[in-house]
Structure formats: C-alpha cells, structure tokens
Image (tube, rainbow over all chains, first blue to last red; front, side, top):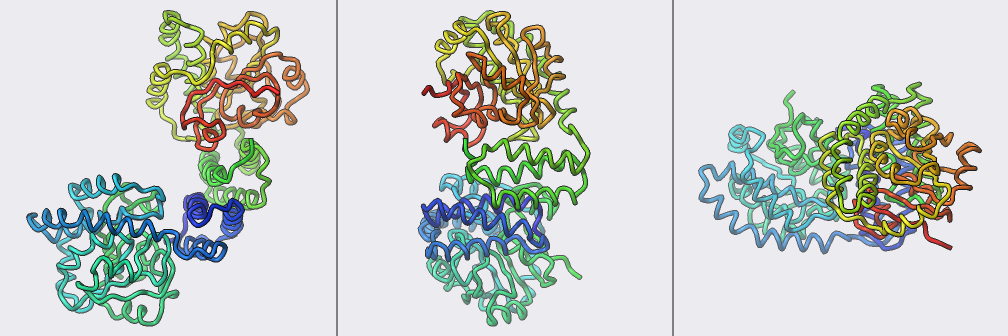
Length: 285
Length: 285
C-alpha cells in the first residue's frame, strides 16, 4: 500500500521516539528529525510505509552504533508471553473450535508491537489478549482452514518478539512437515529474528529461516535468494502483522493476512474500524 | 518558549488537519504538508511554536483563498457557550469564593480550542467545564487578586471564540473602567476577533481592541502600534490560553497566564502534569 499523508506526522513522531531509545544524545534526536523532514518533504508517496521506517532505523543504527536498542524489550515480551501462554493454551484446547481460537490468539498476539506505541505496558498486553479472545474475528476462518488443508508448502511470515509465542497454537494446528516460519534478517523495532523464534521454540513446530532483510515488513526485493525462493514456491502464505500487510498487500500471491488494524490509515485501507482483528485473504486476480 | 522537537510532528499533523478544513483539494493537502516538512527541516528551534502555526495558516489562506474556515465552528461554540453560561454564573454567584470560581471558569473555558484538537465535540466541552469547576486551581488566586486590586490599567488578552463567554464572570469582577480586552486582528484557527468579542458582549464589560496580528498567540513585533502601546503601559496583563503563554512567557512584563496545559511540551515547560489548569505569574526579575 502507498504511504498516506497521515503517515508522515506519524513517521516523524516515531523517528523521534525511536531516536530517544537509541541514544540520550539530543544532537542525534534533532539530526534524525531534520533528516526525516528533509526526506519526507520530497518523498514518493507510492512507497510502502515500512520502507521509510526501515530507512530511519538504519540511519539510527549508523548514527549511534547501537544495533538493537529494542533487545531488552524483546526479552521482556518473550518472557511475558511464555508466562501467559500455558493458561491460554488450556483455554484453547477446551474451546468449541480450537482452530478458530488459535487464529484469534495469533492475531491477538499482534498487540505486542512497539512500532505504533513505544510505551506499551505489560498490563495493556494482558488486558488486550483477554479482550481479543472474547472478540469475534473479522474473516472467514473456515475458508482459511480449507486452503491450509489443501496446501503442500506453507510459508508463515512471523512478526514480533513476544507475539511469536501466540503463533504456537496455530502452528501446531498446521499440517506437520509442510510449514516454514520466516523472521527478519536483522533486528528492527521489536520484530522477531531467529534468536527470538528459537527462544519461543518455533523450531520444534516448523522449519525456521530468516528473510535477510531489516525492514519491519516483507520487502521482497530486499530479501535474500533463499527467502525469495520460499516466497515464490509456497502455495499458501500466512503473513502476521500490519508491517507485513502494508508491504505485501497487492502482491498477488495466495497470502492470508492476520493482524490488528492499529492505525487509521490501515483501517481505512481495509475499510474496517480501527483496532479490528483481521483475517484477510489477498484479493484474487 | 522554544519549539521542541516534539512540536514538529504535531505541527505537521495540525497542518494536514487544517488543510482539510480549508479545502477538499488533495493537491493542496499534499502541498502544504510538503512545504511544512521543508520549512521545519531547517527551522530555527528558538522560535515560538505559534509562529509556525501562523505561517501555516497564512499559507493555507493564500493557497485556497479561504479566509476563515473556522467561522462556522466559532459561531457554534459561541452559541453553545451562550447557552451554558447562565447556569454556570448562577452557580458561581452562590459559591463561597466567586472570584476564585470565576478564575477557574475562565481557565475551564480554554478547553474550547481547535488548535490541539480539530474534532472537539460539544459533549466534551460540557463535560470538561463541569470537571474543571470541580478541580482545584494550580495557582495563587489571592496573589492574583491583590495585583488586580493594585492595578490601574489591566490588559486582558483573550483567546478563543466560545471561551470568551467564560471570561465574562472574571471581567465583571475586575475594577470597572480599568480593563481593555484585546483579541486577534484577523481570523486564525478559532481564536476570537472583534466580531466574536462583541457577540459575547465583552464591550459591555471593558474596552475592546484588536492586536492587528494573525498569530494564534501574542507576537508583539507583529502587532500594531496601538496594541503595543497598551501592552507596554498596562501595569497588569492577563493572558488567556496556551498560545499566549507560548508566545509571551519570558517577556518580563507583569503577566498572569490563565490556561490549560494541553500538550506534553507545555506541561513539561511549566513542570506540571498534562491538563493542569494553571494560574501562573510571569517570573519576576
């Protein structure tokens, strides 16, 4: 999807917030804000919003030498998710439709995202998960299940650390031996990397790979060959999170998007109210 | 006060929101956003934030030929305030300390500000006024009253349409014949002009003048001579609203600021929690 004018103040705001996490040096904060203003002033609005975020985060790493300021938050979110998961799994196993609930939980986990909200609290995560499981899903989980049953090769594009724990119940219900989980190639925001995925035990449930890219989404032309090959050969793709939606929507591949519409621009794009939990199929030809 | 880095995404956001009120033409929306990005990229941060807002609004008037898109909202807010005032005045007359309550009401009225929130609802205004009157004031209203009693010439710098109705009870309690109320010289945002002040009957309570400027604050060097003379000769100034605070703080004149701290930058500047209702004296030599 294109970058909307409304994305621009949000990108400037996020760049400033992120810069404060990267360093205490006010000169760097000012420099990054001025650079983002300069760049966005002439920006081609047909680029997908996560590409600008990727650029900002690369520049912050370059200016500060800090490779992963979100590391401690990721460890914290993984630990919180590990603590919360067993009770939710028990609830899920006892549910009338465990598959549908696994899908809802996977989407609910998408609340663990420091992109739109750097000051996300644990209390907010706990509350949101509870709410999400009580909220009906916007999407056809039966059609999703039918495509899963027919697929020979499934590529699961994970999103954030912490969130990936809540992908486990859904991954367990996908056909054994046919699933690869892909994560980011380098740390960016609190997006999951191989280290996080292993910590969450995803290697016990699927093959793992990274995509070689540091974009907070899936920018195919930025990914390494092995990932591109997996992306092309999969006959079903499951894309978690808003960043993957923003970068992939319109790609024409058989993608199911599972995410929470966390900003007004994305909500407008999908024609749903803000905060809708979506299970959405990439439009077909 | 200086422009903070945090003001910048907010200025871009406000410019975009305002552009949509000025015109439906998306080319103008994009143009104003790009111009604001370009300008703020090189901006001197020692300028006061309302100066950038003034510049944006001038440019929007120039690009669209629309002189006052806030006019209808101002009429609506004036009408709402006129409807709400009598009951509040009765409450105030029966209060233990009507002067203190008049000060609180004048500050509470400052909620009627489309600067930080273009989508302000009438329900929100009603609720905020109720709350404000129940909330203690942050400031020394006795010291304020002593300075008023000793003053020979008081200049009252009004802020917004609607809000000015809630200045009436305080104006009534200022020494008769010694008060001039000044409003903006041209429409900008929903700031009050002479027309609004007359509609609110302020001419029955004080002399009225405009300041000759279209800044959403008081930028002395931008005001006409008559206002400057009044500003210099007054031995007490009462400045309503955040815009007047942002532009005048540090001026060294005997100003009392009455406003609600509506943004995090101003709250930090005064060292108070967000949304504090402030009665604050300009620091003395």
